[in-house]
Image 1 (spheres, each protein chain N blue to C red):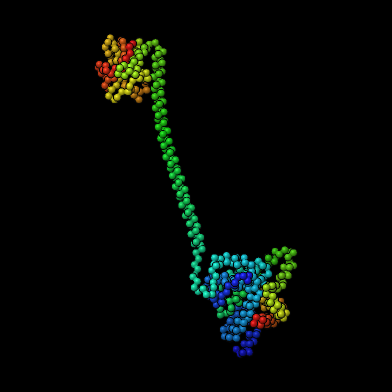
Image 2 (tube, each protein chain N blue to C red):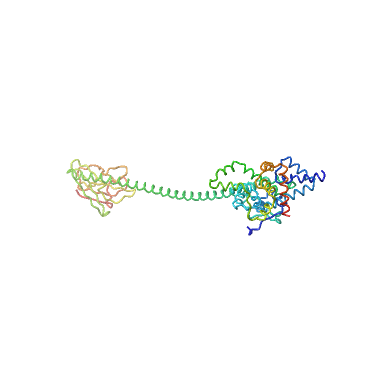
Length: 285
Length: 183
């Protein structure tokens, strides 16, 4: 291109439009081609650009600070505000690797972990308290059932006694029965016992409720005797009221004639003759 | 504003940092050029809120399309200014902008329309106002339309009822005036 043509091209105003971005893509390409070929075009473009830039700088208007805040929020680089480039440190500056999302997740997970541990502690404590309460409840049930057994036994005992007393009352009321009170002897002064002797059929009854004898050991039991004309006649042995029988009354062999009754402590099964040293109670008719 | 020292980098340094997507450069870039670009935008769009939206969009686009910038084809500022101008013009022609016009109160309408039709100047740069006023009126009207109002030279030619060549020449002459005044 001749110098004149080049001058005409520069003066056509197309370079200004190029700088203002007001050219079609084809025209733009053409200007760039011209710029790469001709120094004059490059210089002219540089001068226009410089002028427009200075012009813009001179006409600068400060936007509100909110725009900057919003912009950096939108681009998510707000945390870099303090990390501003300076010309000399630009190259040395370490690359910034950002873990924003992961940091958030780690934080969340950390909170979750703390919550889990707290929950575990609370659960363990609750379990421990519940376990203790359960143990207490078991103890209470055991003690209640022991009480129940105790009361059941007591009731049984009371029923037994009641029955015996009923019989005694019935026998007192009746004229048929004679009550022989036997008092404690030297072997056991505090003992006492009643024997009931039917005047009509001569049958003999003892009432466990109406006796107060020392407890026997397993090898011995009491034996009831009738004294008939100075001779002892065995009316059989009796021990403690056994739990299998609810009967307070025990029927002994009948005796036609007797002047007195006595009880001795004899080896299990009874003896043919009374052991007089162990005469426990005795009473005359 | 004078209390804050402006952060500056040389243009090649900025370009290297911008194209390597170094987030730290964005702050520097904003500090150096936001007001100049906002000056361009706010003359095309006088509605403050919309103009600020466009400024934000401009920097988002600069950030996102940094690799499209070719240093051999012109200055960084020219590239950024054209992004700002194009986004402003797009906004001016968008539904958004037309809606915002409709939403103006009737009382504000007169002054709003006035604003739409006049060129406003930064009071801080009275020197430039002086300078532009010193331009011959025919040069000024063309530069107004193309630079401030976002017109293409073709639209400006239609608006002013001038041949395309004349508009081009006047733009050139106006810029030559500016070049002279800055030198």
